[in-house]
Amino acid sequence: MNNTQTIKTLAAQTNEAIQTVEAILESYENYCNRNITRYSRKHLAAITEFIAAETALPEETCSKVMIHFFDLVKNKNLKGSFKMKKLAVITLALITLGATSQIVEKNIDKEEVKTIVTTNLKEQDDELDPIYFQHDDDKNSSLFEKIRF
Image (cartoon, rainbow, N blue to C red):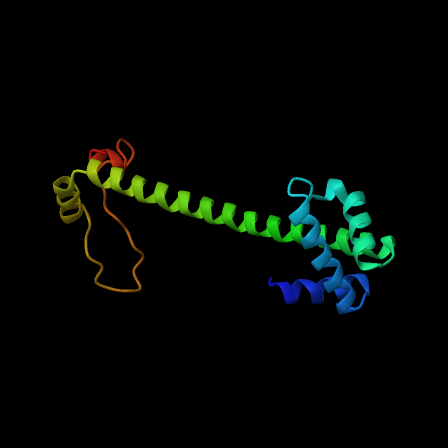
């Protein structure tokens, strides 16, 4: 969100004129330049007092605009961090899946899989026949055991 969008959003949220919001934000910028360490919401009283003195606007108006400004900044920061968290989780999941597939691929005896598939599985002649994989002694060993995984 750029400066113009921020001003328009705050004007709509506070029902104040765009020029009023613009003057308050310019004054807030001046305040921040003079008070580098005291720019956050916890210093709202000092901020609104400074802005009211500099712009000759009522403190209530300055306070209302600044409260909405801090809320807007907080909401934009939360949405950005949530997107980054989602992106980090997705990336981690993909890396984990890739690593798992590499481990599985290295541990499978490919020649044994080829032998089992060629000897135990028959090709279906009729598409309507149910698929039946004819394994030897299914009760005593699983596919993983047969391929020595």
